[in-house]
Length: 409
Image 1 (tube, rainbow, N blue to C red):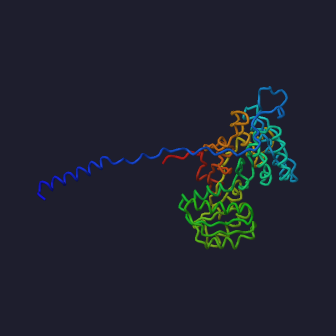
Image 2: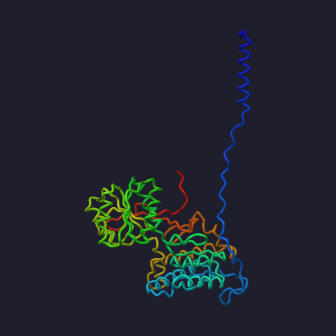
Image 3: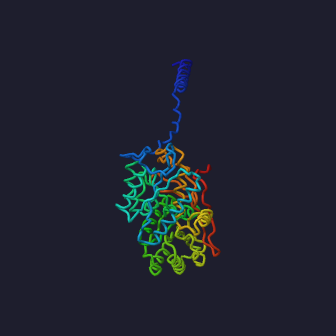
């Protein structure tokens, strides 16, 4: 083949390759982000979806006004005097929230929780027959389990106060202080401070079971390693051997899911076994909150625990005390938050306002003890602080968040 012909063919091959490259279809643009559809509402076989003349209303209520009927189920007649006192305090807090909301159209209707089971279910039936759009309570897990299907049949949500995670979901939301939030928060913070190997000391009871599961999940989420888990009878005399095992585990942080005298016994025991506070960071849960005795135990100084921001509830406590002449019970703030949430969402159409979409607002809500929001599984997430034990009292080392919005990096 002559030189000019060879050059011509090479030129044609190059030109053809360029032409093909120029005609190649460009890659498609990335698919636009499509927000997932809102979660479906619980299926109600017999939905309570409109006002009826038979529903409860106060005398003098105009005929064209539909009250915001709120059912409250609490153990008002419990055989336990402290439980009865708690129920009364929570009811007072609910009334206080109603008046603070300024919404005079809210109608609180009460029923007794009894001992759970059929009694709690009957309480729910009573409130629904009176037209309750939402149910606040009950307090105990078995009662929540009995109330939930009754409310679900009518399409009515339940804001319960139980800490039993298994009773949540399908229209039931737990507005309670869940140990899972506290464990997740303190482990996550420890991870940011360079802790990688974790051990657990937890009691052999229901709280210990919850804390153990939450601990494993939290350490995994923090990309840490669980090096030891020790369970014990919740007694100061039963912590010696479990503490000795943890001290030898090589952990650089140990979560102690126990409060009171027991945790004040564990601290010195760990130190005697060589796990001094400069070698092993001690972590705690909300059981450590409001325990003045922690600051007097030198072996616990420098420990971290998760809890609501200190004095977050001061305004509520002062207002309650001024109104009722006594301090509120520890859980009374939950009833206040529940009614405040009802008031916030009450502007919608009657019997169509307390929807799952509204309750699962990802921005959450402001409560007495800080921000909170519900998860799709019915449990709640709270904005908690991390506090450090010092000889002069707890000190905030990581403030409670004021929003659930993620910060841009």
